[in-house]
Length: 417
Image (cartoon, rainbow, N blue to C red; front, side, top):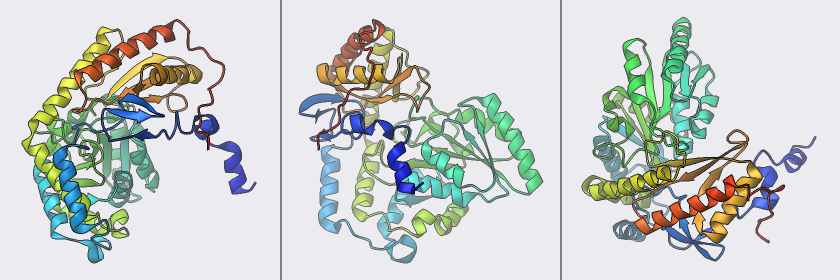
């Protein structure tokens, strides 16, 4: 069969619905300033799908800094990869600021989180080494592990007993092969909101020889006393060997970084292919990030407002009988029962009649019969936003439980092109 013919006929597990879903359930277009309230298909919505934890995206000081940086540098400066012609004192200054903030010796900037962590994993291990990772790690970690030519073992999500079981297997195999062990997990899991069991994993270093690499994309900037991340919150920074995060979540920007021992970062600078063969992070981003880091360090009220909103909405959901799992972060999953058609009907009701816009996860991402709504509270949301949302979920849950969303097919809500 022709490769293209196969793609067109299949569409993939999610793509099979594209003809009815595109522009509404998938690839929706939110319009207006990035804020808790935006327009969707002409209607104002309370938006819970932006990973804008600290509300920095449209903060006046951030917008001013970004605008001035754009006027000063344009989008192209510097040209070339950092190894060749794209290194600047400002890149090095941002790396120093981040290193001090997360209490590490050194830091390397990365252009993108997804590519960056994949490339770091690829650079860190060889075929003799063994990777152990949480089974519910983000796709970027899973894809990075796929690049590994050696053995890899997944442990059940946040299950320390299975983690130790897989770690023991890995250490025995690595010893036999003359390699080492790299354990990868997350600081905050972006789907269920649970922090990774970092402290428990670190304790296993007393029994086994391995290194820990964490992806804290959803924890950097607000977790812990200073906002330095989930490992700071759990008091185990010194035992986490490599710390990775992005600028996409709390920072309201783009790009990423990895921090750790100076000798390891020196190696990564010369061996991380996504950076060696890619243009340097533009100065407009770097200067904007310096401003954001200054604000995170000097404005604790941003974190305080975020946690106020998190506690208000999570408490409100639990008081109304909703199951939000074991989240101990701002990420707020709402677990319900129902199939894909019911879930899509409920989403439409929330958007069309209650003007609530949030993300939904259904089969094949999770098992059939389950529905997860994911709410991302931010420092920018108001008490009124939260109260209206709680009322809307309470009303729609009653309809779901009463079977009012029973439909045979997913409705056609695709954009008319």
